[in-house]
Length: 260
Length: 261
Image (tube, rainbow over all chains, first blue to last red; front, top):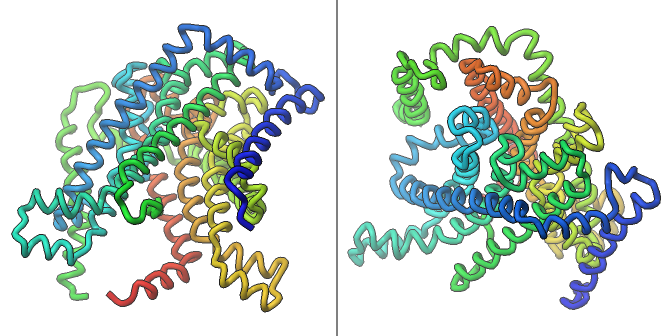
């Protein structure tokens, strides 16, 4: 039943090619009007035209900037708060109901507030990105800290390790795989929210370009930008996974993933 | 559990939320800021804004679209996931395409669906389906793929096949993963429900809230934000209840495997 690596690669490439050919043929055969779905070749043409424009690169830069800053803030705050709440049982007990309440609040609920407070500024994008991705990291780190082996903790105690040494040598290595999983989830969510802010609020970036292309009827350009957004998403996933492998290379169960 | 223990738990669970609300109430009580009205004022407008016509015309249709999209995505995701997960070749062929489709941030599909389906109900349900489908589909594929080989052989030995095999082996083995996918999908679905209405619509919860913001009806806007938050919490609690029912056997099994602790 095992399919070889090489064979898998060829099957995957064939599937991708088939998908592109299908999208070329469906509008050409008139199954879907091409003002709704232009053939692949015209989307590719529009994409090439976009790549030659400075405005496109500026928009891409804006999206990546919002994503990176927001993600960094969320990861920093999520790890710090997760470690703190995880290591002090009284704090965890007192805050768990509040966190359980705040976490499922959809970040898009904050859109009107962001618009009022910051307009189309970078800060309104950051508000959404940070709120959405913070929880992904925080909850994972919290679970990670709870997973610490009590025997290891007792051993550290009896060897006279101080609070910081215990966090550094016992808690952190246990929580790290969880934190990295949280980072991977947060990286994807942050991109979604960055693009959402651009689409709805009109902060500069790819999302706004897509909205503009849609309202001005530039259908192939709109599809080209959606493809770019998808490739960006693939890129974010690949980078996050590579980072995961690198950071956890030492870990015996690199494959284990906490259920999200 | 003793009475004192129960009281302590209630106090711990309710203490901080009550303290935070009280802080908000007091701190905003004589707020002159236009954007941050007193909490009292926000709560005062809730009955007049959200009870009555708006509940029937905006809130309930939004929820109906969310549930319809979520249900469609679950059926399609599990159906496709079982087919794709059952065949290694098909999985290898579709993996790059699925990775790409999943990586597209769902909100950017809103303009495409507006183009194809206008700004009516169809568009909004399609947007919700397109976002909810991927977590369910990919988790189902993983769950179906990773089923227990001994159980697989046992089924074969007992001649269990067809729909009985699907029900008792494939779907049962994949159900913890399917539920994980559904939980992720529900969170995405709420976001897309709001976005599809904020981007272009003439009714719905998201539309109403953005309308309040545009007309600077600030306490009404805040009440909408609170309502959305409560909705997210309520749906997540409802889903937890559903999960407890569907996966009770699984959590029990896990506890038994881990041994008494």
